Image 1 (tube, rainbow, N blue to C red):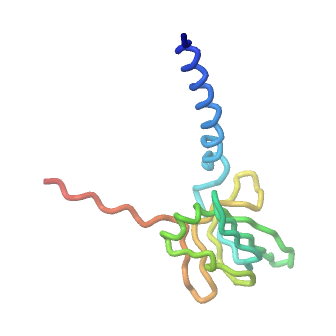
Image 2 (cartoon, one colour):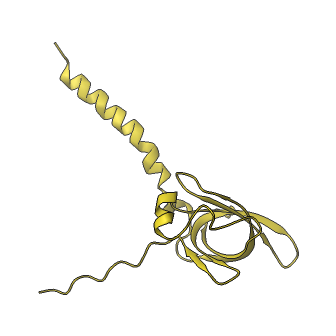
Image 3 (cartoon, rainbow, N blue to C red):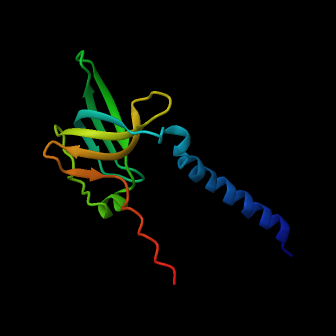
Length: 137
């Protein structure tokens, strides 16, 4: 004889316990200021091609010569491949202009919007513009 209500409750608790980290992980709207990108000129120090998000490490030097270490997160590698990126898109020493949605708390981290390389090539983290809706018939 099985206790179906108890089994269903246990399954529901298990589902909720395992899904909570996913919800917390994607709470970026509470972390980053998406109202305006911050534009930073810097030098790539490291590029990690990994799941769940690529990490771009870069140094920014202000007018006084003070160096700030920044980290930008992108979408997962498979998404970035669809946007034209490869694991070799950035290399240590590349001079770049970074457009980033910075952390609201002032930490030197953010969500990448795009990077412009020294030669003018643009690498975007945003997806393509949505297709225009089909005309009504």
